[in-house]
Image (cartoon, rainbow, N blue to C red; front, side, top):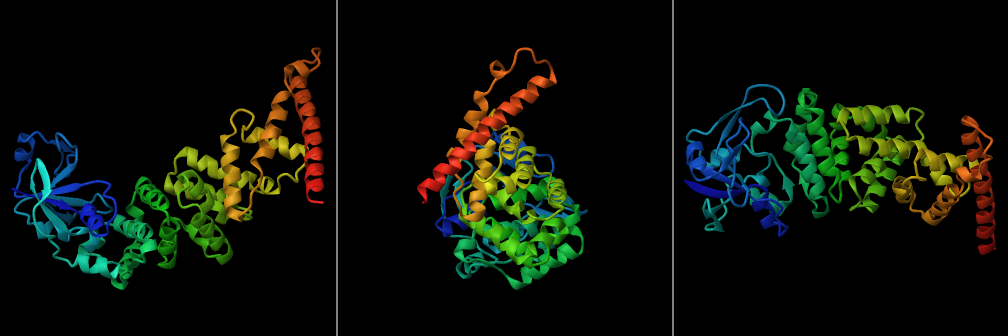
Length: 389
């Protein structure tokens, strides 16, 4: 039984990057041997095991044969599979390298890198190149290449011409249609979470692949002004939370009369989590009014506070203002909004005529709050004018 450190850990070691996870391959082993050593098998389809102490993943060397559509349409074999056979089924040459370790319970490196498909050479050349024609058997790899492109964008990596051509062919053949919405979201979200996450969408757009999975987004990104606005804003927020990055990407729909419909179609295609989808919807809905702050009337300010529930919790309005500021390189004052919320909350039931009943109470609260907010706006704008005169 031979044990190897494989995949991303080897690649990142050579790139002098932090290693996030260690994955291991077992050559010459069996399910029974792994279970006897105390390993726990995970998943019925693939011979993958969790280490009893470190919980790292150890997989038996395997080959895969296409047996259906999508990323799940494979039959797996572990009989007499060599290290080179297993590495050949991997997506990119830079992910198809291995380093021998001492044993199942000692991952000390013991030898030289095994690199049958010239991954080190492609690392040196900064090229993302598929290992073999088997690449086309798993359509998810199209998105994975784009994600690696985003991850290594600042290092200058490019996609090999032959790999780009193969990715386009897979998309044209309709194979991406067999990917689940969850998998498309997972890859896209992981890519967007990278410092240069916009590069994922940039590559898929340039290769005419994005239209096959997100046609509304692809159409809007064709507009150079909108595309550069969104991508430049994302460049300014490399470490922002995914909620903010997704909203910035969706800014390409702004000023489109069908913006909310296009957003809905896009989030449906991605099966976007509700909290991210709802925040993007709030951004599209309230963008114009936030951008105008503080130059709005009392009705608009009150509506903004209530519709974002800022009077209950100001986190959403804070994040929305952060997105607008990032999009336009401006600094709309959060202090202005905090004071407006305080003024709103000062007006309560005790300020209402006790003789009023039902709906009249709510109407009176609205009227009183508008009066106070209008007065606040007048004072704020006067103070601002005085400071700049």
